Length: 476
Image (cartoon, rainbow, N blue to C red; front, side, top):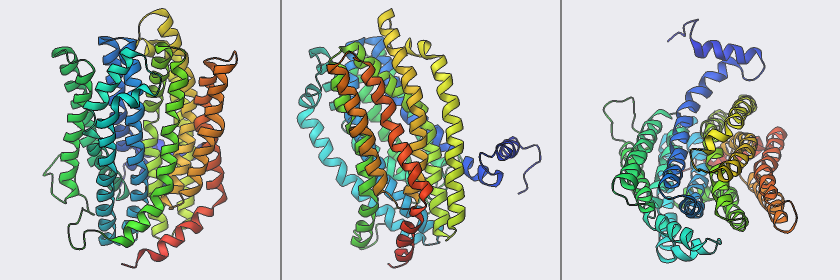
């Protein structure tokens, strides 16, 4: 179908092309993949942000501090799932792009089994040790109680969310980001409605927002699971997965499991490096009291909302680079990766400027009182700047993941978080820097790995890495 000359997407693509940001012919495929994922990411990130705001209104800083501690553990669940899903999208996109749909379907099946196996011990840990997990972060008694309740009520959602991430990345790997967007956005709306009903209507407190998260996440699993079994949605523009979960014998494919773990393990490590650093940072924040803990967590939530752009741009990079490599078009894969990085940088800088401008009004959505608002607004401003680093890190590492090159991004993540960010925060405890150490940690955390991953992308070594997976992909 021909594109009208006055099509706004076409016009924007031509403008970006003239500015040297992204070629017009690559902008449309990138946008088609990215915008539903951006909406999806915003929907997913908004759930915990909305929970934090509602708890702040209903309970105050003791509740939001408790939620901050619990959300640190929830973020580990999401990051573990993202790590496994990163390997999934890499293998699915390359196999699907090369016309090997049966093998792509078997990759999805093994990913689903691994996701379930990974979730069960985490759920047991939450149920058996919730108070101890919250207490070790330095929570005060009230915050300890609220954090424990949230962690217990959100435990069933661990399995739901990991399965949702595998399904989401599978759809991305085959170029369909609309189906997951509809499911995830619907789940986000349901989460806000249920959480508001439980916390304000039924006076369930923190348990209410956790229960709302669990039920809405489970609803998304049902919707996405229907399509992942290859069943038709019968409308709404949603499509069944062309690489559905297969229950044919043998259910476990050892060769694919090994390759999936080989690609996913470094990505899981990279994601864990991103998530685990929040625990010592929360411990540092707790030494300054619940107001700083709340301000730090609000800043992280706002940054996560900005980083919704990476849900689209990073995955578009992984998928388009992976598909072009699967078709043995290395030069085109490199062009997609470089131009998506440039486009992301423009978007992130603009968003950061807007958030900095409205930092105080944003802070007032979560806290009240001059001291709380001032502290939270300052952290929001710093987080907005650090989000630009997330944009660089996400899109550069996304291109590397699309090629199956996941080891060095893992090392880069370790360096940024533990060699630079964490020491900066700890220095604030023993010097007059104080909370400025946390500011520095927020900045260094994404910018160091972002710079390293961009350098890795520019080197081009990822093309050689991808050839190993392409050469063996056809063997069943």
